[in-house]
Amino acid sequence: MELIIGQFRYVLASFLWGIFLMFLYDFIVVHRGTKKIGKVRLLIEDWIFWGIAAIFVFQMIFALNNGILRSFFIIAFLLGMVGYRKLVKNVVQRGIRAIIDFFCRPYVWIKKKIAKKR
Image (cartoon, rainbow, N blue to C red; front, side):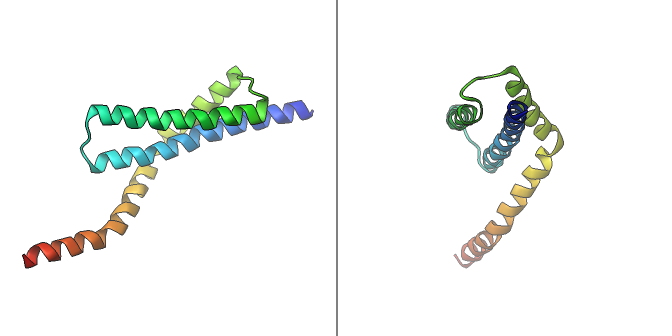
């Protein structure tokens, strides 16, 4: 019974890691929307993000399943990522943008006041 519970934890953790990584990736997507960046920088940002993500995912695999990669891990991980993208991606990205706009609003207001005085 303990083996089944351990495997269930492994599947649940992989599903949640898929959701969590897509959540973190949304911050990068929102950041890209605020600035125009080149394809090379986009490629480098993605490589760095997914490289760091891979380190943490493999650490989770070793911690929960002794480093054994199972097909249901990959399926649960991908289901978490796809489910997040299909269900809540737009809401989260709008929320992130709203929070950034809220905190940047005083900066923009001050910048406009300074520009008017010049």
